[in-house]
Amino acid sequence: MRSCRIKNLKSYITLRSLRAGAYMMFYQQEKIAKNTSYFTLALIVQKLISFVYFSYIAVQIGVANLGQYTFALFFTTILAVIIDIGIASVLVREVSKYRENSQKYLSAALAIKIPLAILTYLLAVILIKLLDNPELVRQLVYLTGIIMVLDSFTLTFYAFLRGHQNLKYESIGTIIFQLIVAGTGVVIVNLTRDLRILMLAILAASFFNFIYSLALVKTKLKLKFFCRADKTIVKTILVITIPFALAAIFTRVYGYLDTVLLNQMINETAVGYYSLPYKIVFSLQFIPMAFVASLYPAFASYFVNSKELLGKTFAKAMVYLGMIAVPITFGAIALARPLILKVYTAEYLPSILPLQILVISLFFLFLNFPLGSLLNACDRQRRNTIHIGVVMVINIILNVILIPRYSYIGAAIASSLSTFIMFLLQLYVARQITPFSGKFLIGKFLRIVFSGAMMYGVLIYLLPVVNFLILVPLGAVIYLGILYILKGFNRDDCLLLWRSFVKKES
Image (tube, rainbow, N blue to C red; front, side, top):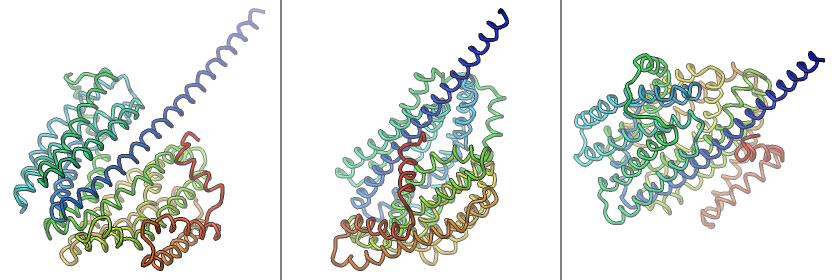
């Protein structure tokens, strides 16, 4: 009788443990889903506000001023990677594993970043003095250097909140930051065209974000900022950051060096003509970023548990992003001229061709997101870093060759070719990771591209007689109608695509 009771008690305890474990698993999944939704929404809102604001000031300040403004921002954006050296990514991973060591990680991170911030700001000042730039540009770099430092520490503070699986406050801060930039900037640009004062809008927003994130770390996580750093942890962080630092450096140089080279080899007006279409294409990246946010954990899980599901999920992701990218590409090529002339005025007429060239690579740019996510999720992060480094070198060589000959057109060509090369490198490794159906992808992409080409033909035919704003939704209807007739997608695809954005917990 006694042994029976003990057995029943053990069964009861085991059942309660299983229930508790199931509840904790459900709670964690729900928390991750909420965090992803918060941050995805914040990212979309931030990108939209940023794009509208950038478009507004582009018209207000003119091409040459826009070139100086964006050059100063991109110049310090490249250098910002020296301050962080990948520490934020390491902190997110390590803090999520060992939350009890959060204080030690914070002290170590600050011990590394404070001297790096001082040295990087001095480096920015020295480099801009050595380069042949007007005094105004130098003064703008002095201001963007302060923004660079503040944003780097903000990134570190938010990393701790991410490590504690709390993206809600970062999402709020991201939106408020962009609202401050846009609201303050619109007022300033209507009062004065002085770029130094206009840059204060970003500085004010960065200062808010810095104080806000600092206060969150202190109040929500109860961490202190003036504790002695553990030398062992400092060394550990520095060792772990090496691959992250390399990837970050390669990405920054690959993404922003063309603007710096364009400024030095040609002039700030060329930068203005290039930065506008670059910003338009760059702002569209929130679409694959939001899509991939829910793919990464699925890829990682399927890589361990089901290679068949991994291949199918990857192939579907490629098709869905291709379905979104192709109509944007063909539509932007067809409507680039009225878009630039009506929205940005005739002053930006030379930006039409670089926009069309850059948008050609949008299809491959979108597909590079699930490819990169697949490599990182399946223990190929070193290979991914190597690819970024190779493409960075190719991009630099192409820019050095093409910019002196073709100016901003050459920069656009170099960017598009680099994106395509990255696609080929990533696809080659993806084939080694998962046995996805190449025949399935080719068949789908042929239908998608044909539908996009048909839509393009209709848009070009109607453009002389129909307002381009009406042609945007009309083109979408035409594209989807043709694609549906060709069986490029069905009702189940629509439901899956909707769930991938809205119901991430599925």
